[in-house]
Image (cartoon, rainbow, N blue to C red; front, side, top):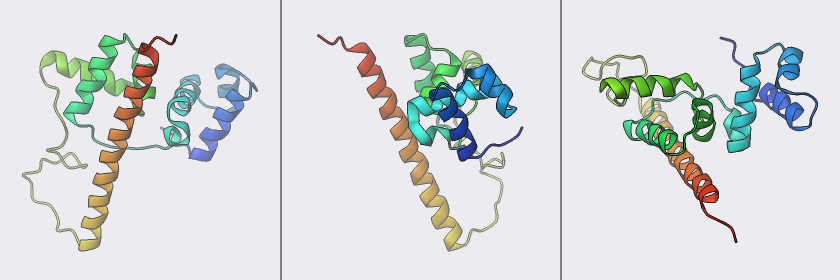
Length: 163
């Protein structure tokens, strides 16, 4: 799968928002899939430029359950949920639904990014690596909290009647 930088994604999104074409036309013009244009536009609308930044993280069990619960309560599609929570792959939500139905839904907290179990020995980290990992973990936690709060604000905006 090709990876696109933030500037390219921004160019495509700005083209769409400026009315220079629809999803199909812009997809053909830039040589990408129509679904990518849709995903980038939705992510930009919900999160601004932060929605265009590619991120890879392991989601907590609580986060997964929150996403699934909101999808059921508000009858949202996978694409809508992915845009709201800034999840890069909407298919992840389908996988979570299937895992939950089988009783296999779990967090990847007990796994290393490589997929190894935590009980396996790992190389020692230097102090700079461990401080980077700590900062990365804190920023991931803040990002998830920010996503949750944005979703809560969006929900409250849509559910409150304005007189």
